[in-house]
Amino acid sequence: MKSSCADRVLSEGVVIAMIATGLLACASRPARAESPTLQTPQGEVAIFPADNPWNQPIDRLAVHPKSEQYIRSIGLDKGLHPDFGAPWNGVPSGIPYCVAKKGQKRVPVKFEYAAESDPGPYPIPDDAPIEGGPKSNGDRHVLVIDPEGKKLYELFSSFKTADGWKAGSGAVFDLSSNRLRPAGWTSADAAGLPIFPGLVRYDEVSHGEIRHALRFTIVRSQRAYIHPARHWASSSSDSNRPPMGLRVRLKAGVDIRGFPAEDRVILQALKMYGMIVADNGSDWFISGAPDPRWNDDALHKIGKIKGHDFEAVDTGPIMTK
Image 1 (tube, rainbow, N blue to C red):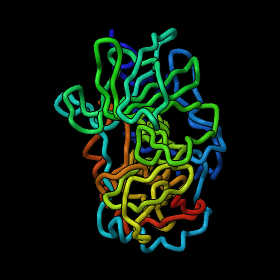
Image 2: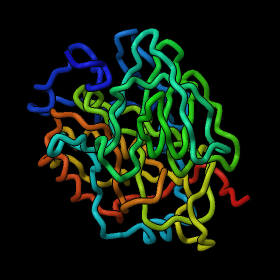
Image 3: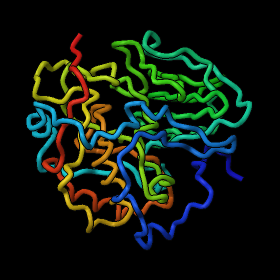
C-alpha cells in the first residue's frame, strides 16, 4: 500500500463521471467567501479562514488603474498554460503535496536563507514527494499539510539528508489564521505567499468548483509587492511590470462554454477568484497538483485563453519599501 504522501488524499464519492458528462454547476454558483477544504485521514481541514485573501471572490472589485500596462507586460497574445497534469515519464507534473500521518516524526531542516525561514523541525515524511522528482534541478518544492496541528509546511529547493532535510527556504503557515509573514520575507515562494492554497487540485475540479484564487508566474516583475505578498523578486523599478501579489481575473464577458468541463471549472474560478502573481517563471503558467486522472489533452485547450482576456484588479497599495 502506498503511503499518504505518495498520493493525494481525495474526498470520498469523487464522481469522475461528472467530468465526462459535463454535469458541473459552477457557472450558476453565487459569489461568496468560503474556506476550501482538504479531506485527510484525520478529517476535513479548512485551507485558511473564509475571509482569507486567497478565498475572497474578486469578481466585483474595481479594475486596477494600471491593468492595461500590467497585462501587456505579461503578454497580450500569450496563452494560459496549465503547469500541471498527469505524471510524465514517472515524474509528477505540477507541484505535489502530501498529508502528514498522525504522530508524524518531526525532523530538522537546514536552510540556505535561514534569516527569512521558519526554523524546524518539520513533520516531513521520508517519502515526501519533491516537485520534479528526486532528480530534479528545478524548484524542488515540498509541501506538507499537518491536519493535527492545522499547519502547512513548505520548502523550496529541498533535498533529503541523512537525518532530515536541507532547503533553500521554508515557511510554516497556520491554516486557521490570516497572519502574514514578516514584511520583506520570502517563503518557499518568491512572493512570500503559501503555495498550496493556489494549486488547482483534481478533487476540487471533479466536484465542479474551485473556491479560491490560483497561483501563476510571470517572466518580468517589478521590485514591489501587494499584500498578502510580502516579498519582491526583481531589481526593476519599471512600474509597468506587475508587482508580486498582483491579482488578475478572467474578464466576465469571456465565453467559456465551448471548453471541456474541467477547463470550465478552472476558468470559472478565474472569473470569480482570479489568480495571484507568486513567482518569476514562464508567463501565464498556472500551478496545480499532479494527478494521474488529469486529461492533459483537455487541460491544454485552456491555452485558447490569451493574456488580453484578463484584467488586473485593485486589491491594495503597492509596497516598495
